[in-house]
Image (spheres, rainbow, N blue to C red):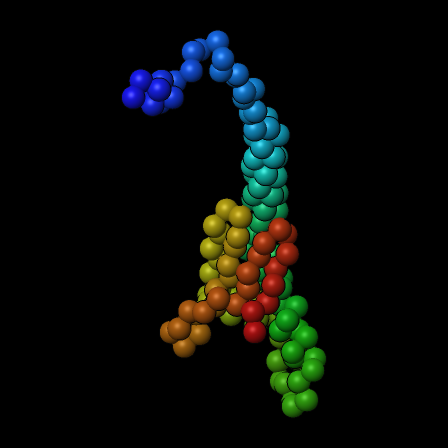
Length: 130
């Protein structure tokens, strides 16, 4: 019985070998996280600084309208009289609204009581929504 008790006891402390502790490469992981964070902050800053203004949205609407008017095959009285731009400016002054969200801007048109987005601006580019 005495033998079974001795085998169950832990060996003396001087016989235990200490294993070296391997630490993960924490600085490299932290560095990658910092780089990602700074990258996204840089992208947001560029988006904020290049967000198109209301005039850029109006210019996009005018260019799309001019493109559609020139491709119109019917008889367009306003275009023939040279009043197409004036009429469009008058229409935009009453029915166009601009919303800026810092990094993104949206141009909306109100027509027949319904307001719909017509342009979206991001990174200095205005996109016409069809």
